[in-house]
Image (cartoon, rainbow, N blue to C red; front, side, top):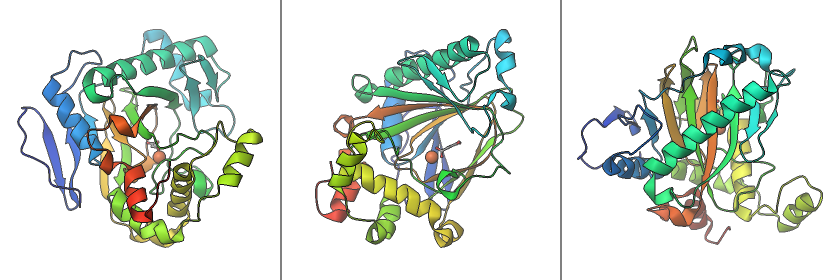
Length: 309
Ligand code: SIN
Ligand code: FE
């Protein structure tokens, strides 16, 4: 159960009560550009830090007429599930089709997402940084994935080759209005319960291995003990068939033309079906949080009884 939510002081915010608490909070935001009501921003930050999903039901990312050719699973290179874009370098991977048009659309989405977050989430505005952008045009239901790569199983996010020290992973998702179906998610139990359940099964941190991986170029930088624990947690969750069968969750769909965000390193999630989605990853230093104690880093440190990053 997530901690109780205070009474709303701002109109237009709705909160979905489920068996496991008010996991999804909806904010009345329908424009990527601010200025945003500071009260909305404060509620968004508090909800995100408590492990809730913040839904912007009326916020759609609109494509240009000439971008219609991009809205097809045929764009994906063989066997790839995503097209990935690096906003810093402008490089696209995962598709060889229409490179300039694709890069322009993804850059515009990355800019919209970043400007929205900097305008809305004031405490993070100066310190958040953008990671990669991804475009997921293909239907995910019915595809074959290895268990570790199967995002249809409940998991928390961690990056195998890009260590982040102890920083947060904040992701913004939007289903394009042209999609013919909503994206169906499961939202699992709160992070502290997940972490406490799996902690005894997690391997001890291996600092020598972290240095070796960095030397060999397998990781971009040296993994912290926290990076290693989060990766192990991600893998153990996905590979544990009993856990996947028995864990409690809330089912939630996100309609075409809607946007949502959450700290995916904290919110246990699984994406069961859907297509034509865009996603932008951000990172936030734990020190910028209003309540750093709610971060996975601090939760794991409390449970493990030692510093991890
Ligand atoms: C994930 O981060 O697990 C993917 C979510 C999605 O594809 O909807
Ligand atoms: Fe994920």
